[in-house]
Length: 317
Figure 1 (tube, one colour):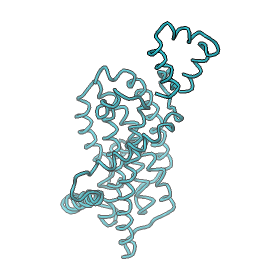
Figure 2: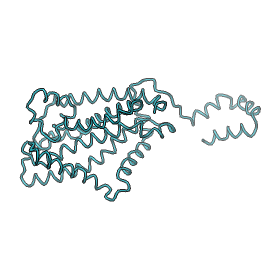
Figure 3: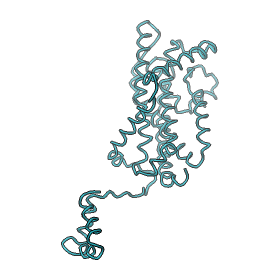
Figure 4: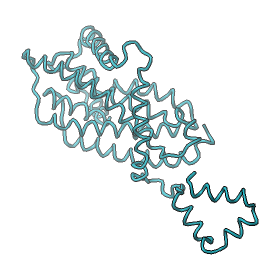
């Protein structure tokens, strides 16, 4: 409570209600003077009138809170672990080794002539960022219901902080990919990078947008239907196998299956990354544009649903 407000409240309790009324209506302060004092130090919180509304100015005002959430996600992820941030490298390396053993060795799935380590690591890089953002944003309301019920701030800050904090993990794993990439490039592996690799920042934004859109929609649904959490975890696991992570799209010869896979908005993003960085894969401006349009529509629907649910979700969780 600010100093001027404290003086008014103190005057009320010390002098009594009758004298306070005289002071309240007596010039030169008067009603308007008091209102001006209160207006100077009061933030008015109003309900959102429009469902499709993102108040960027308000989010910017809470940028310190946003930074705190980002730091919290980074610090607590591997807190009280022995290896700590080393898990950022260990997890993709172990996943890559398992893919090489099972899909490359036992199943003998083609990698379009590329070294298996490089092919699988490129897919892991894209998929882990998408799935991590998706899984964490899908629990926005359930994991933060305690703070949501006590303090006001733009709720969209929480899923945005998740997407941002996972960028650090992506950057660390990208350095691992570059190290493996340079090794095979020096040893003469058939790696043919091209200018389409410059689309990588755009691809990251698209992955973040798709994860954010799907995540806030699922999070809004889980406030009423807790079964969605279990179902969604299962769907994400299957979703990876419907995306060309462990196999190239060129191995799919059935046109119907190929068309169904191209409907998956993640497919063109992964294929574009492999095409630009490795020189193999399927690239199409049309399919990449489809994924971008899908992301925009999904984010629009997600924001509408999110804004609608956040008004009354405390009554249902």
